[in-house]
Length: 151
Image (tube, rainbow, N blue to C red; front, side, top):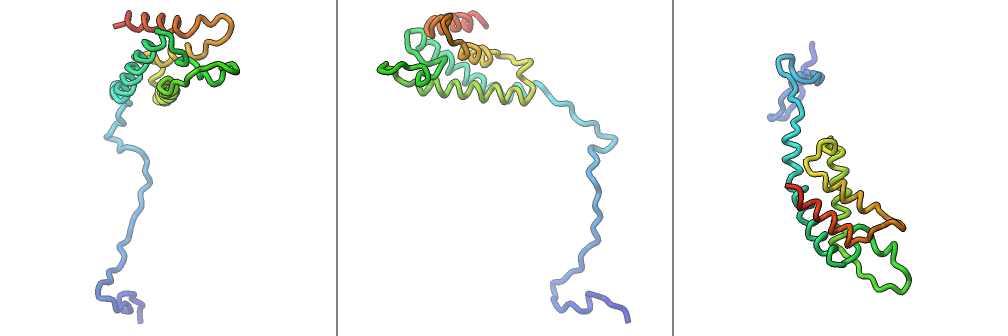
């Protein structure tokens, strides 16, 4: 007498398991070449983010050029006691966006060939502190003139 599991199952919906074969993933088939990474598609993905950054940067630079402080540094860290300085949430958001974009572009390999170096330039200006600091309004006017001079 031989053992047949189908004989012992009383369930009318029972179907025996099919024999499964597993194949290890060894990459694309020999006739398929892997697609090279496309730089243009990556650049196109970041274009809306970079444009939003550029628009916000120009708006903040224009405001800073007229005398508002806090674009290039967080005033809470440099405020003297008793100084009446207002925070600038848009400027803080712009700095956060710049750091995030810099990280994203570096991860994707776009930072070396970035079509718009404004992110790095802005963050460089944010790092200027000390006695030789020309002041935020002056930095803003110079950076704005440099941006407007570019196509």
